[in-house]
Length: 591
Image (cartoon, rainbow, N blue to C red; front, top):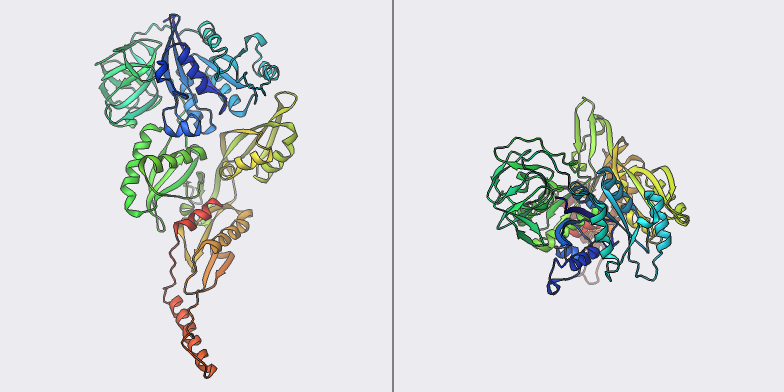
């Protein structure tokens, strides 16, 4: 027990967590030189292509008689739930800061998560081999942030391996060994679970009390499911069977269960006959962004359902329920943690399951109190009741931190004000960089906020946001009518004071993208029964006078009159229904 050290690496995106982990695996000879490759702990193709970590990944290393259990964590704000899970399973954290960029928004967010868990923090400045590295300035920022001594800060280069041995030594010296408890009954916390087609559910666990052996009967304390430990072992980084796991160790248990729902993240594993108090898990993750996911071809619904079910097995934060839309057919309303989460999910559906998708505008969950006192949650514009039935609508707000060089403060402030944000305060990290704290509605961050912040600050700003609370708002449903028929899939929820502007944008987009018909096409944006913006697309006109040659002009007029009556009749008989192509939906959603 005294020779076990459990730690994780936390940092902002692109500060070099996975590269540093590669060097640690090389130095401790955990992976053969011939098998070594860059970002070896990033197992998904998507992670390797984008150069980001999406899933946490544990690995066990042996070094100078010590067993070092490392968990590599993601850096992006959408995957911070993965970080909080890793932190619950360890005693120490290596806080990595890029020497060229200094402290960024996610550095702060992950640091606060680690401090809440009372972890031992080891500050490390990475990328010191780069010409633009400002080691002195970064050290000063870290001292100001952590209140530590300058000599406690380590410097390293994950790329060249310089200083990595010192980090391993610091982990051995500074990170406390796991606590020995008086209780010998097994209690293992599940910090992640994945589904394997051949093995069933594999639980990633940290043993807090007792030990677990291969073949023992186990049960989940919260879900009450029972099973056998088909195999147990450690990560090297592939599964290595050891036959048992003892107190303080991090490893895996192959449960043979059929679904991740039976083996929930945060649950406690114990032996079948034992009665134990469950370990304190962590907050249930609540999705913040909702979008409809539909197959482009209606006959692919079954495949879409199976594909989402399989992705759910490896992504415990995804929630989904069936949804039907007149325009797009059968699909699912899915809940995500943020837009990157949605993007990765779409990409995995397209790539791993070869599906063509239509994705509706992302929206947030509104909490509604009706006039009769009942309360409902609305995730889509179609479910928003009429204004006369609504007593109050509340929308989710977030606390937003923007870290940026101080010369861009003006641009950031005007952008956040435009997006309905309220200013809280400003903190100075060093002479040149500031943290601006805001509170703002979640829905205003969804579409293009990140891109606009980047362009307002020449790419230097970094942002982090967290759910804060629900606040009253004035929103309404905006309907879109094409040929006087409401198109369900284009209905959106808009702020009352922005309804006209948004309506105008939508009808203009439709005018540009809808194919012309045999009759004049009316496009309208309406709130309730009131049209607030409209456009017309003129009719395609067949030349009915082509067969005439010379003669009296009245013959020409007669034919044109006949054509006019035909078009009128077509409209009145309801033949004026319009099929809206998927490209048009996408054009409106992108706006």
